Image 1 (spheres, protein in one colour):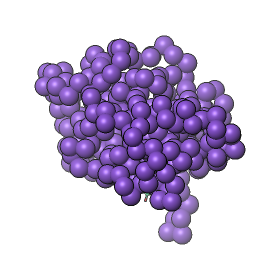
Image 2 (image 1 turned 180 degrees about the horizontal axis):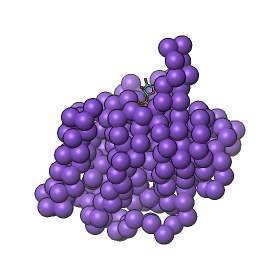
Image 3 (image 1 turned 90 degrees about the horizontal axis):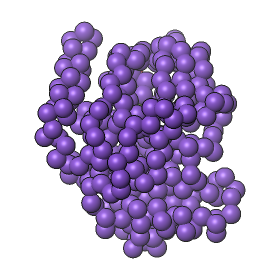
Length: 272
Ligand SMILES: Nc1ncnc2c1ncn2[C@@H]1O[C@H](COP(=O)(O)OP(=O)(O)OP(=O)(O)O)[C@@H](O)[C@H]1O
Ligand SMILES: [Mg+2]
C-alpha cells in the first residue's frame, strides 16, 4: 500500500491558469417554513486550472451550500457561478464530488464502485477499467480492486471515494470535509495521499475543511468565511513550496500561517 508522503515534481500554484470556477457576488437564501435564512452573502471566489483552494469557516456558515451550488444541485438566489466559463444550470459532468462519508455501494467491488460515475454518465465502462486501476494504484489500493467495501478500513474506503470522484476526468474536484470521519493518524495519511494524487492529476480542487492544519498543508489558497451568512473575510495565499512533506509543520512559515488562522477564528468566535 502506498503511504509515501509526496510523489512527483513540484507543482506551483497555477495562478495564471484559466479560471475553472468563478463565483461572482453569489448570495443564497433558503426559504423555509420558519422564514428566510440567508446562508451566503455576496461571495466571490475563483479557482484556476490546477489550483487547490481550501474553504475554512465556522459550522453553519454555508460551506456545504457552496459545494451544492457548484455541483449544480442547488441554484443561488443571486449572483453568478461559472464553470469553465459557462453558467452552472444543473448537475455537471465536469465535476467530481467527494463527500464526508465515502458512501460506497456495499454490493459492488472496489473497482465497480470507482466506475459508478461512468455508468451514471452512460459512458462505456470497459473504456475506463484501465483508468480505474491506475487511480487505485495511485491511491495504494490496486490489490483491493476486487474486494468489497466492508473488507476495507475507513481510510481505504475514503480513498476509493476519491478515485470515484476522479474517474470521469472532471475539471474540478469538490471535497466536503472528506476526512472528518477519520482518526487523526489516518487523516494525516489521507492528506498526504490526496496531495500526491493531486500533484499527479493537477485538478482544480475546492476543499472544505474544519482543519487549519489540513488547509495549510494542502492548499494554494485558503478562503476564510465569516459566521452565517458566509462572507469571504480573508483570502490567504499559502506560499510554502511543494511538495509539502509531513515535516513542513515544523516550518516557521507553516506555524505563522496556522497561528494567523487560529487567531482569526478565536476573534470570530468572540465577535459572534
Ligand atoms: N436545505 C436547507 N433548507 C434550509 N436551510 C438550510 C438547508 N441547508 C442548509 N441550511 C442552512 O444553511 C446554513 C448553512 O448550511 P451549510 O450546510 O451550508 O453549512 P456548513 O458551513 O457546511 O456547516 P458545517 O460546517 O456544520 O457542515 C445553516 O444555517 C443551515 O441550517
Ligand atoms: Mg457542511
